[in-house]
Image (cartoon, rainbow, N blue to C red; front, side, top):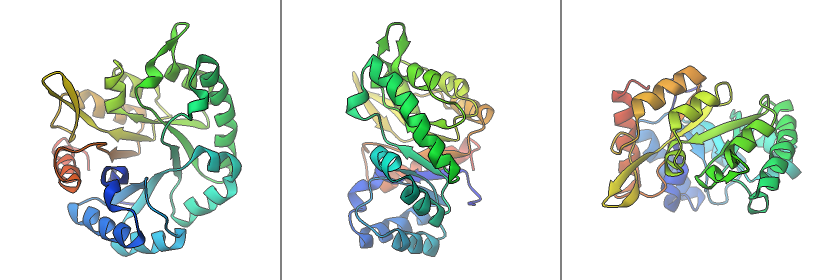
Length: 254
């Protein structure tokens, strides 16, 4: 286990992870920035053992992944074996498959994914759901996100709450993290800034989200990993990851 609770979401630097050589170079840069852990997402094709060799060589922990829901459902043992190889217990999906994006679909996914999550849990993994803002659309008085968490099995169906997207959808990130206490092992930290009337992704601490409230909520909720992500950067994405890391350390997260 890494000494730090902070990790870099590699989706941030996805333009530099297309080949095994690029992945190796990117892992080295991320380690040099000061991160001890990464979330593997949007990587190009690479053998699972080669990925382990690279991260072990840099002294990095794979704290979580984004894994296709279809693979989790159809090939659970293969997913379990890969994650156990990497000593990684958190598998998350990047978003709700299009076929489930309706009132009926949210409820159906909550039930189906709970069964998938239970199978992964039998192999030592957690299943987490990563939100965007479309899940805050209301259906008969409940948001899609409320349906997902209220209709799923809280023992197995966990969250990977994304602070930017909750704010983008008009929600309160800190309130949502508290609501998901015990299910918020991993959280995506992502800030929002304004350019006139345009919302921009920003480095953590460089935008307008209430980080004091968010980080206090994470502590109350039992968050294990604080994962830095920035979908679009206004500067070099490695520089953005570095700025977020520095700011979070100044906020007392190590």
